[in-house]
Length: 355
Ligand SMILES: C[S@@+](CC[C@H](N)C(=O)[O-])C[C@H]1O[C@@H](n2cnc3c(N)ncnc32)[C@H](O)[C@@H]1O
Image (cartoon, protein in one colour):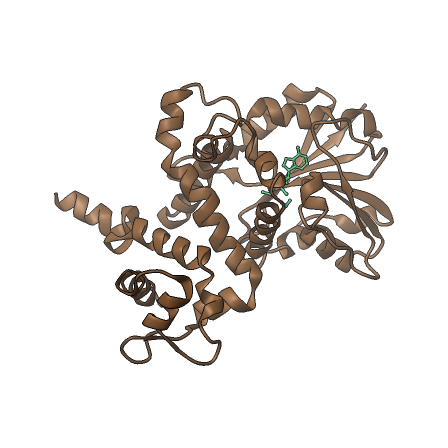
């Protein structure tokens, strides 16, 4: 039992209540509690409970767990006020979007992982996952989201929230590759969501023209910025690429959502558009061998790997696995280099079209 106690208290069940902590965040997010607490004041548990129509004792138990995690405060018994963390859920919609996506999209998928593997042991198709069971759907993850504009919007917001941290900072993208050598030139961002990466690139390299492609429901939520050469286009990356002869085509944090055959399909869909020497970048994690990283980092990468399984029967890949996808897609894709910016969760896997 002592081994289990040690495991429980060091991560398997942080402080004995990881599942409760997620439940707490889900409740907070679904009922929009952060916006119901005055930004610079306080409200009683009783009044908050009345506002959302939930039993006061229940809401008190739930909120006090969050307060123990420093999300909200109890400045005097029975009253709730903002902490720095809860205030961010009001001031930065990307944070509240991230909480909503984690608790309403990912957590239900996690809970159904074992059921999904029991139902579909081959785990081969993106629509045979924990997410599929949780949503009672035959559609892949991203297609479900785009059918519901609010879910698509908040997923885009959650993606943006990652760029505020060091591991997914867009600085690694802008500084980690020789973009200036392609200016002036055209760069296509496939699955580029609301264009955060594209905007970062043109801000630093004004000679670049960026074209962001994503599914229609995502593109409809995207906004151009005056003075920045970023355009948006609805395009399914499994269909033939309509933008011909661009200098660079990149997939950032996108192919890890898809099983191998789908990645191969997306790469082949580029071929009719490619000129000799075009660069194809896959910007994604490159998994180290098991146990090679410090344990804390290893857990984060393995957790992201599992999330990909839960939502798409996909996975994070090792370098040789990325190379194998390229070869499978077409022998004229040649691996050129791997750029791993220090501190970045994502590497830049560079290939060149060599016809
Ligand atoms: C994990 S997000 C990454 C977003 C962005 N590239 C980033 O770095 O934050 C994956 C993106 O791929 C898009 N996507 C998924 N399937 C797609 C498809 N078939 N064609 C185009 N975009 C797709 C999703 O809508 C989503 O915006």
